[in-house]
Image 1 (cartoon, one colour):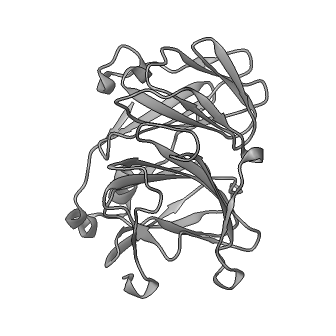
Image 2 (tube, helix red, strand yellow):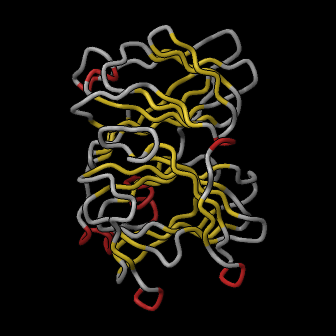
Length: 273
């Protein structure tokens, strides 16, 4: 388990490209036959990737930084399927299609991942002080919110999976946004979340294309070049927005003080520097 320590906004001007990427970008989550995890001190979020091989399920184990007997002893877990596969939680198996989401509640002792078709799973875990039932949200059954305008190249569909009016959780809020053909911008105009950390995982981006992701305080922005299936950790004081060289999707997940989706601090485009 990789560990990422928190940063102060005053550090941003001192970071070169390598330092920015080292603090905020998770580059290698998905390795065939392995589970990789990153422990962030930003709201104690854990990000992970699981890539089981046919006939060889992967068990989600606890890690020393968690100081727990099993992974979900004090945590809840969101799983986003990038492909076709199955997740088994305490003996119950859940088949997931591409972009389906599984929520695993605090106290689940055994979580394993399996796929016979090259599936991969993106994991987001947050601390939890209460338990909610393990539940599935199907991409095909979730009604999207349609946002944006072709004139500003940000037409997109947003699906909420784990939230107060959907799958209940203690702290985690999680969903998927997919851009329309010809659109490149996500979350523009952008915002910050003074009370929450938000993480993006970019996916469905062709290997030769990239997303230019903006981060930092609105008056002191920086950018990172992000490829397919890489994740960005955004502290509460940081904007989080990007423009791609091709359409893409991204998984968004939040953790912190509350679960109100609308609790954000808007930033006008002309305020960005």
